[in-house]
Image (cartoon, rainbow, N blue to C red; front, side, top):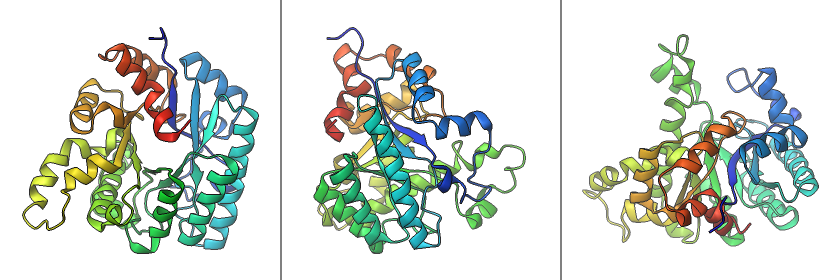
Length: 320
């Protein structure tokens, strides 16, 4: 085995300034060091990858991308602009960067077409969707053309969080947001909303309609591997389908380590999904590269499994 595995990180973000300029205050990132890293698709990003030993980033536009745009035509135009910018960077650094497409989900048919354009013409490896589209989960049938196209193209859709809708904030989090704003985001709010999307996807039957569809959930599957047994047990009381919740989850879902470098969480995911469905990620620049790769190289795995986690699984799943 190689002394150092090839390391691929695939929940790594950038911002196109024209897209970020549309963000409401809740979604804006204004800290200068963060903005600098989000807008950089060259020297600084590669320098920080090198310092942490990351060989390749699969880059995607940061949340909420086009998902909160009420003007569908603007979403289509800005998605194309952002994807073309990312393609330029990947073309300039083909050995360091690959891309996930930003999709204009306010217009699902246009989103499916943009997925096909970016995969077929630009060489992208799939797409990323952030949170809900204007308050709507993507298991609704209006969005199924995206999944139909993803299956036809044999690429995954990565579901990533964004800040919850205001009614959810008001009911669940408002009391604590002033003192501990992280409760709204990675500490809990992101997980609740994104895990709910995962459960709804299974319940919707989309994986029966598109049996080759693959989805990726970051942050070790937003808690779903831990809860899969209990969800399955509870749903069995009324379940009439040929495949159980747990069977669908294990067949169609992949997870990444983004922002979650925990040995117990990794072991849970290995036991529930198998190591072949787990991929290394950082969540750059919202999380730092160095602690992620330090964890990767010390996590208790045999050399062969470390190679799979570090990049081998991503190479296979994304056809890198």
